[in-house]
Amino acid sequence: MSRTGHHGFGKADGRYQAAQAAYEVSCAAQGRRAARVVAGRAIDAEDCAELLAMLGLDGRPADQA
Image (cartoon, rainbow, N blue to C red):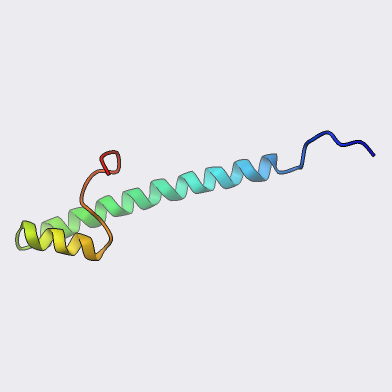
């Protein structure tokens, strides 16, 4: 039996990578929405920063984080 070097993970790996990318986009969008809601409800900048920290967000866009 000869080996071709192909392990049969090509399609499954591609689907996993696509799902992972979609998940990351979804998480980023959810984080932006959460930050917007927090900013709109916060009393002041200090309150906003504290609330964002509680959620594990820093309030910066993903490309600046």
